[in-house]
Length: 212
Image 1: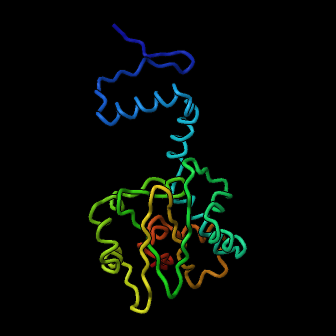
Image 2: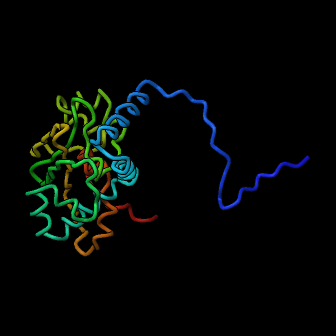
């Protein structure tokens, strides 16, 4: 006896799941449904938020840094007002209040959130697990140079290290120094040097190793 699995117009059988929602999932559903019922948000607002989270990645932040490297006017405006970052078509879906920190030969900035894991998600995507870990959160402010060294970032003694503590109201993006030897690079090429970790400030951009 044969069994047909054909479904017209792209339809499929209902997806079955028997997983029981966890405590936090039940709470999230209840709060969301109550907020929609009270008119505080709409279902479309919630959908847009999820799409923003799914679509955000460190490449968005890399575009911002690369633009600042090649456009001095943009860089000045960005450092004065972090919201300029969202002019590049980036969706600031959670209304992040952003401050951009410029690294220099004299000062190296990096970011932590000592209370939880506050992070500029619209521009960097989801935070890495290590950023949320109690070890990083506590040690970054006490032994910053040691933490940076664990990421392979060893700074000269005459470079001042500044640790910035993110909050629910204030998030930070580090603008790393542009590597020497990239004077003739395009904005797109430069963006490939900028990683999530360089924009947190635990590493610095490095030129790719020559082949061979």
